[in-house]
Structure formats: structure tokens, C-alpha cells
Image (cartoon, rainbow, N blue to C red; front, side):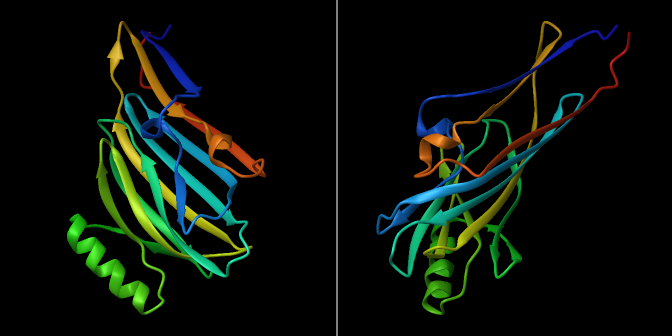
Length: 186
């Protein structure tokens, strides 16, 4: 018999700081979250969470700019961030905020899709997204790693799944896959 139990919790949590990844468009247009795929790999107390989201600009304007916001758990670390352009993944660099904004502004002037990620505070990260073309899905991938605590032989992993709240339409696809392996002794 294993010496511990594992609790996996996927539930709604109020507040933007504990929400799913969203894009805040500028100027405002309706955005739909077309798909939200989550893969979680747990090995004892080490966890890797991978998120793959697609957003759809429902507006009539040709293209808008937006800010992608994604919170991660307090003790987690971002391991990868990518934005897709013409089917190709552009991987992000984590830079100081002022340098990231300077580079982003220069890239947007050249009408190239940037993939710059910056820490927004309180466990949230943000990336400027341009262009978000009307009628075209914008795909973003993110992964983070964390070590979950054990209390009274119970390990708890939480992923706040509240995607519908931020979408102008029902999601086409939502999937959460969890792979759990343990070297527990009996």
C-alpha cells in the first residue's frame, strides 16, 4: 500500500490572479477561447504543467493587439512559452520589463510577431500579442514546473480551470490529461 494519497483538484477559483490564461485585446473586441488543452506530468512531488490555448478574434477589425496574462503557482517557474505564427512556434525569452517593452515596440513597428514574456507581479506573467487577426486563431503554449508539498501523506495539485468565464463563445475543445508516477513504498 502506498504511504501517501494524491489529491488532484481541478476547480473554479475566483479572481484574475487565479484564472486561466487570457488575452486582453486593445482596442476591445470579443475573443473566444477556441481550445484549452492541459497536460500534467507528476513524478512524486515534481510537476510539469503544459498548457496549449487558442484564441479567436470575433471582431470585424482586421487585427488588434493584446496582452496574454497567465498566473502560475507561487513556487512554480516558467519553463517555456511559445506563440505560433504561420504554424511555427516562436519561443519567448524572459527579460526585464523595460527591455522587453523596448524590444516589443521595435518588433511591432516592423510588423513581426514577437514572443516576449515578462513577469507582471503576484505570480502572473504577461506577453504582448500582435497581430490578433479577425477570424484567425492565435495559439499560445506555456509550461511551468513546480514541487508540490506533502502534508499528512497527502500531496495536492491544483489547476484552476475556469476557461468559459473569459470566452465570448463556448469552447470547442477542453482537455486535461494527468500522468502520475510515484516511487512510493508500501
